[in-house]
Amino acid sequence: EAPAPLLAVRDLHAWYGESHVLHGMDFEVRAGEVVTLLGRNGAGKTTTMKSIIGVLPQRRGSIMFEGRETIGLPSRRIARLGIGYCPEERGIFASLSVRENLMLPPVVKPGGLPVEDILALFPNLKERAASQGTKLSGGEQQMLAIGRILRTGANLLLLDEPTEGLAPVIIGEIGRTIAALKRRGFTIILVEQNFRFAATVADRHYVVEQGRIVDRIANADLEANIDKLHAYLGV
Ligand code: ATP
View 1 (cartoon, rainbow, N blue to C red):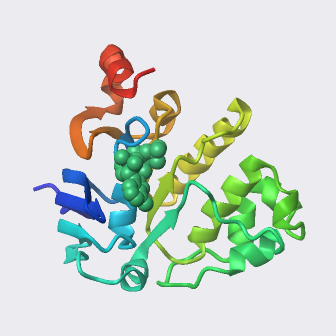
View 2 (view 1 turned 90 degrees about the vertical axis):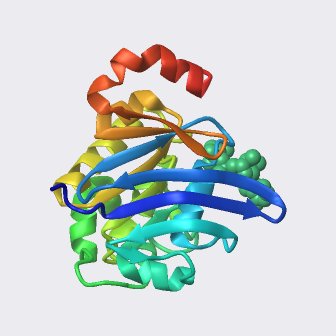
View 3 (view 1 turned 45 degrees about the vertical axis):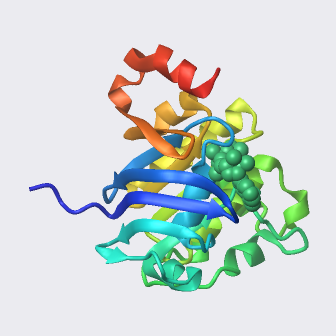
């Protein structure tokens, strides 16, 4: 029998005010997997992440994490179960040093990495541990945003378009970081529009369109589905 998924999203609906944005999302992620949500702008990927971490109050359906229902829990409680969110806008504190930024998020669960271990995972950040957030490149800010949630003890990491706006060489580094995190046992949900990048890091992909999962593709089958993906993503 297959193990229970780490996260199981069932018939998830979400609203912004009157605007009904998610229309019955269904997907699951097993422990240790890297899974992407692929889809164009406005498909509902970020809204799905926000629903998982509980910052969107108007949700309906079921989001089970480690066998426990999280719909109805406040976001602080959900964070404490071990779900870490890395937003698209990164949220680095410009006036704080790299080390101080790493120290900021509260530890929610045992098993978080010590700051020195995080710096060891990101050699660029280690060199700049005393630099202010403002002095960092976009790629370094993204690394810092990921590094920051590793200290909290979260075992499920939600990464919202980590490659957005970054140069190809930096995107490669982000890919290596994600692979290193997978080797360390983290489970990752990655929101992406760049399926070329997604193919280098993920085990499986879900395609999101108009607030629904419209396709699921194993990474090994991505090439065979390339025309379909172009159509989904409008590229
Ligand atoms: P993107 O890459 O642009 O973030 P996405 O797939 O993550 O795309 P969402 O940000 O989840 O898409 O947006 C889904 C839908 O919800 C879109 O139609 C968007 O306009 C709408 N939406 C997003 N945020 C809000 C908000 N705060 N208030 C009202 N509508 C919103």
